[in-house]
Image 1: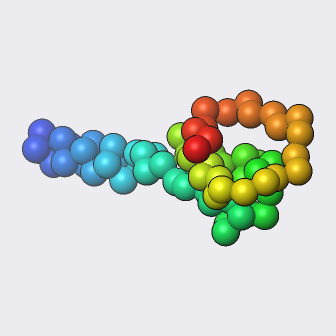
Image 2: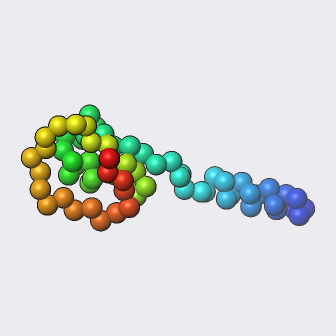
Length: 69
């Protein structure tokens, strides 16, 4: 295997094995019925987008790096 072939294999491995950096959006109540469910569904880096309205929820616990808007 030539040096060029080795570099191509390494580059392909890095590109194909890299985790996705696309942040998602979880919409409340369109995707999840409650804010708590939206927070639970979200992954680090995601945004929980909450529609205008009144939500009867309390003691929300955010323990991962998400944005709530």
